[in-house]
Length: 485
Image (cartoon, rainbow, N blue to C red; front, top):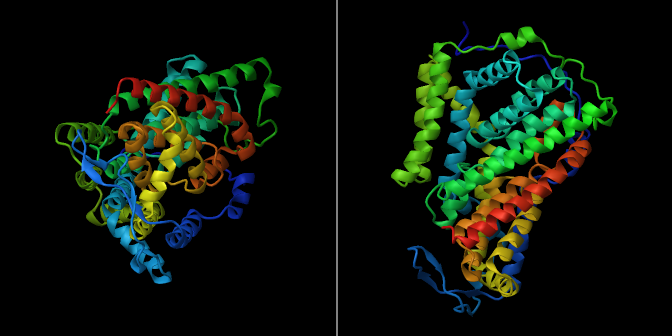
């Protein structure tokens, strides 16, 4: 028996995706952020400097005092020079160190876990069990959507990319098309990751900036996550029923599926030995420990980072990896996600410049004036739209949180939107738009594996994204009505 029930993955023919070909035409997120840094530096010479008074609020957190904004005399050290522009980048990375460490260590742990092949085999076994028990095809697709949604919420997004061909093979085996496979795997992963109540990259980062307990407000976010997955499954089943009535209605008709035919021998090869089952149990305990720690002991980013390291070691030892292999896998995982970690510090440089020029509060004061005419619910909904637009340019969730939440949190304080609700608005705007933006490399790569052209995927998934925005707005309205903290 191979390590932790290792099995070989089917050989997949790589078919170029039209969107992937065009990817090079879209500016890199670092380039976009650098232009934002230049713009902010120029604005320190143009926008008047000002500041709010900060006071301790009733909930024990520091916040801006409404009506206390006042201009201050702009001095030479408040304008950002050419040298200051570049200096802001390492300063920002230092200030964002705790968030960056979470991203690095999460990538490391999940790489160690992935190298055991336990997750791959667990999904393969689940699919085989569905077939063995003759579960209705429709219910099987629903179960798989929730299965991938769970792993998207608990494990991450791009590191589950290898499972895309697996889901596509199942959909084809059921007699459906490539789009159904993409909907189940990519849709499930995307929705789970976007709405996850324990997403360290988005929710964790935003909570750190907002000075809120890590993963607080888990109950309502979990309800939103499950509701969103129900909508995802329903959207897929509606498409499936159209296919059953008229196979010619397929949105990916004519695209080659060579190499993706179901090979039941390959599915039968998925297995977990006792060691694999133990590793799976350890991974599930990781989720439980994280939730328990943040609720019971108020763990923060440093504690969660430590937990990623600890579990990487435990999983590696149980898998009987050598010390060198554990370290190499961990470093490889951290390296693979280095771009996502570094962009957090890069985005933090924006706040460094705003602080030096003392123009952040001036911008917040200007933004709060028109929003003050709306109710907190409408203001929070408008925040989701703003975050959605920004996400097109900064598709990194943690990077976007670092770039926007320092503005959005004090803005929320001013207009009467609870910080928890402001973070939910960020989560809705950031996560859902990731399903349709061509600037997200992970999405394009997954679509390429599924052989689904981006334009076809966009047409398929856009109605769902719009529905999930409405669902998110309903949850925001409920959160406002119950004064969710």
